[in-house]
Length: 301
Image 1 (cartoon, rainbow, N blue to C red):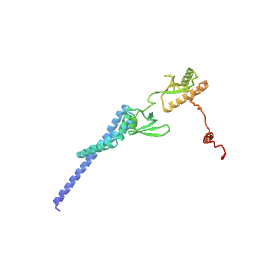
Image 2 (image 1 turned 45 degrees about the vertical axis):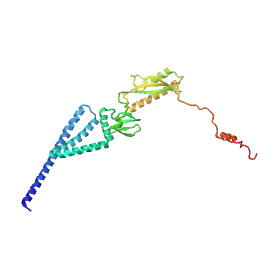
Image 3 (image 1 turned 180 degrees about the vertical axis):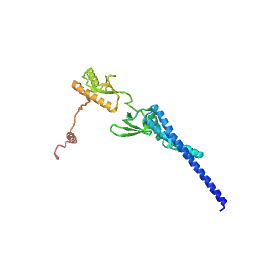
Image 4 (image 1 turned 60 degrees about the horizontal axis):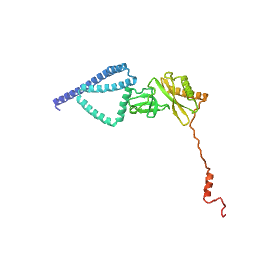
C-alpha cells in the first residue's frame, strides 16, 4: 500500500475523531453548565418568588417538578447546540411536534385532567382536609395531584376522582367559611302549643356547645303535614368541621327529643289504618264448591 495513502487515511481518521471528541466535549460542557445553572440558580429563585407570594406547598411541588423537567430539556438542547448539531435540534423539534399532536388526540381526557388539576390548585375551590360533596358523593380531600384527587369517605373508603370531574361539576364545600348554618325540622302534634315547642327548641340550642349565640337560633313553621306541624330550627356552627358539626347536630336533636318527652310535647309519626274484610282461603274454597252445584251432598243422592 502506498505510504502516502496510508498517511492520508490516518490523518483523516484523526481529524474525524478529533471532531467527534470536540462535539462530545461541547455537548457535555453545554449540558452540565446549563443544568447546574438551572438547578441551583433558576429553580430556587422561582421557588423563592412563589413562596413570597404565598403559594402553598402543592403549587411549589408542582413548580419544582415542571422546572426540573424544563431545565433538563433546555440543557440537552444547549448541549447539542454547543456540539454543533443545529440540524438535529430542528429534526427533533419537528418530530416532537408531531408526537405531541398525536399524543394530544389520543389522550384528550388525560390532558384535560392535567389542565383541570392546574386550575384546581390555582383557584382553590377546595383544599386538602376539606369536606366536599359532588354528584352524590362526599368525603374529605386527602391529596390533590395534577391528574386526580383522592377523597376519603366517611366509611373509610378512598375515592380516586379525575380532576376533570371535579372541575366541571358543582362542588359543595360546607367548611369553606368560618361559620355554617344548619337546619332541622321537628314535627309536633296539631294539639300541641307551637309557641311552647318553639321556646323549648331555642332553649336547647342555646345550651349546646358549638352552636353560636350570634346569629341566634331561630324557629319557623314550615309545613303542615298529614300528622304533624313542622317546625324548622335554624342554627349556626362556628369553625365547621365534618366530625364537629355532625356531632353538634346530633347532640342538639337528641336534647330536643328528650326535652319534648319531659314537656309532654308529642312528636307524631305517620301511621295508617287498614279497613275492610279479610277472607280466609277455606271459606273462599267452600263458596266456589257451592257455586259449582252443591258438592256438599254425598255421591248418588
